[in-house]
Length: 258
Length: 260
Image (cartoon, rainbow over all chains, first blue to last red; front, side):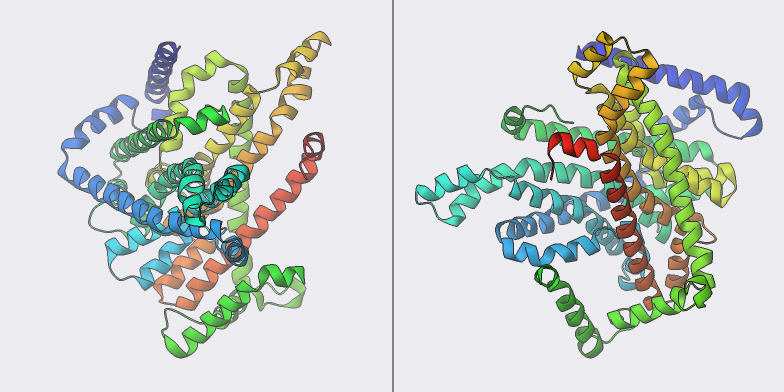
């Protein structure tokens, strides 16, 4: 089953590349100056030995990882706290509902004004954008805790901290993990956006802007290919971790969610 | 009373913010909320009554921004739903493109801004292409999922009644998939707002995002804050309108499933 899927996927990718190659070489390439897949793949293969690209992607991924980590450190405790104090949550909820619709990239110009340090500014906007999915999912998970399990613990004379540690947290953890996975994608968008707006010495976005000012579309596409592969890789790792850690949760809910 | 109970915290925060920025931390970068509101009024809402009080700035920036966002979103929704329903109905076909979709949605869309700028040499085409590319994935994936997981009983009933392929699609598959499709559309809408802003900041000559960048470049902190507030209000309104529309369209679904 999985092997058949992999074969089909490989055929699909190969077919896409071949059709793209033909269409660009024979048709689109005559009006637009767009690089063919073979040219893009060739550049992409060379990029890992290009020190500028390598350093840039390390900087971007570093900001991404750090921002995501800090966001987890803030949003998870906050979500658990609010989730276990209904009155506090009721009070704060409207504030969250007002802040959440603000498109996160709009924060970047403000961050540039407020935070003079470039790296700090970039990490901050990543943190801000990643907070929301993690916080919302943690809250959702805290609401989803089975009340019977909580009441049973209480009946057995456990205090509220024990209930939190033994029932609420484990039961909300899969939701937190889903929030982190969603945030990981958003964090990458923000990491690149901040570099596009603020520039900087190094970074994936900086590299793409430089390549575009030299009209090197093949280089941008190659860098984009790596960015996409990085996104796929991060997603796969987080998904595998979720499946492994929370196997019991997916068994219980009976879903093979992706 | 109920509203008071629910919302008391927001005015409290606003008041604390006002007092802090007026008396404790006095900085141009942190204007008090009243100043932000005044700046927003000056920028966009102090126009003549005949134009609903909108200023030239508002007409020249807010309207193009909204138009870009909705056109991009609409195009992505159209492609996404059509392709998604086709892929969802054919398991083998979706097997071939799964990998490509997985890759496409992992690409951070802003990476493509510099590319589209070189390719199209035009601001509008760049912005639209970025929005369409970025927001198509949630619609596509949800449509695939919705069309794939149509209840077997429905499809078998349709076969028994001898519905043609087109009828089957129109009467059974699309309605059954529509709750998922709407969920995807809603996700895409908020993503479209984000990409609208970044594409205007990076390659724009007008729009709220462009105004935001201009305010930042001229160190007009109140202008930056008010543009962010305006975007938040727009995001809230657009989302609420969508939820309202969704409720009307999917009223049968809610009734059938007894969702309050």
